[in-house]
Length: 204
Image (cartoon, rainbow, N blue to C red; front, side, top):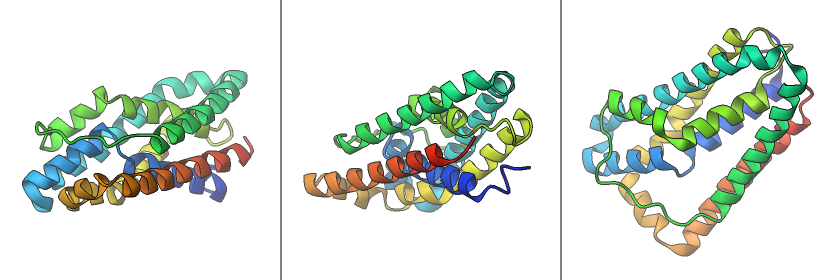
């Protein structure tokens, strides 16, 4: 499939996945709380639930909307540019975000964390932005692309989310320092903006 043989598209999607999976948000805030409370070994089930749950949701969104978009090239182009604008908005929000407090009611466990992704606004935003930006009419049917997106996202999200679990307590203390928080959020926003530029330059 052409999507596999297009290095620019793969790099753009991997960069996008790493950034959106690793940035602060409801799921990573809860995963941090799980790590601080239960430790790495006992929190691995929650980590797997988070990334597999999001990957499954990405698959479902791509499969559901993909067939419609592939049949309407103009709608796909409009959504691609809309997705790029959405990613820029996310980068701006990250760069100007304050400290997100952890939750004492983190949904520990595989099933609870996987189910949480379906009510997580960031997860839906990621799914819609991903298909709007990366779905390609030349790269096969929606089913094949949905599977590729889900697998790539899950593989990239695992190492991207792991630090929130492994270093949860230390990271929470680090983010309380205003200067450190501004530097971290600025770097994350820059990476997300870079992935947006890369996907805009990719020919569709």
